[in-house]
Length: 247
Image 1 (spheres, helix red, strand yellow):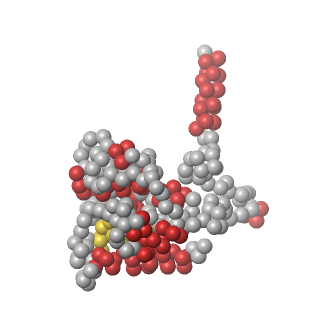
Image 2 (cartoon, rainbow, N blue to C red):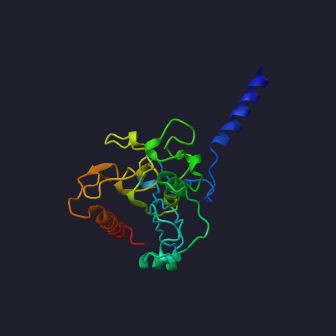
Image 3 (cartoon, rainbow, N blue to C red):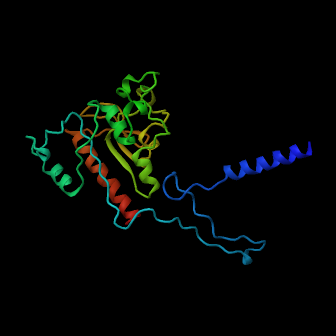
């Protein structure tokens, strides 16, 4: 019996060591482990050593800004950027200064394409087999992107990026978009520090139902409201972010 107790104790010690093993610091597991404290507490304050903990920078000095623009109901060949007939000089400039890909999967409807773009996974793997308003309790069609599938915003935040989303969201089931939440599956629950836009697949172009983070806000009443909403909201967020974190 004593031998059994000793063996159980050894097994318990091994399991405890495994459970408390520090996660790797190479980005293969997120979030990154916290930097250990260098402060030393002694019985007396004057004998203690305090050193402010500084988390290492995960981004190189020349890390680029990342801008993702998703436009509904626009085929690849429509803008003149890619040989189409619609004159889109700003899009062409973005493409010239950025990176263009020649292989991209789209589902041709709103929510699934958004979910695939945000997570880098097949849309049905992340519960988005159809638009959010048609969410049902079938695997692949719940309208909820599982928390086990990190979004690009969540990954970038761990590396030190400031993240925000503006405009149409359309990745939360309709019964979870009320003023009472739940807010787990709103943009701020998926890695975006700031959101300004509307949650549904569509809204009034004149008096849009807008949300800032998780709070409904009074819509603008000017003509052409939606067209003028996202741009100023983004600029306001950008300048505030730049003022607080210049780098």
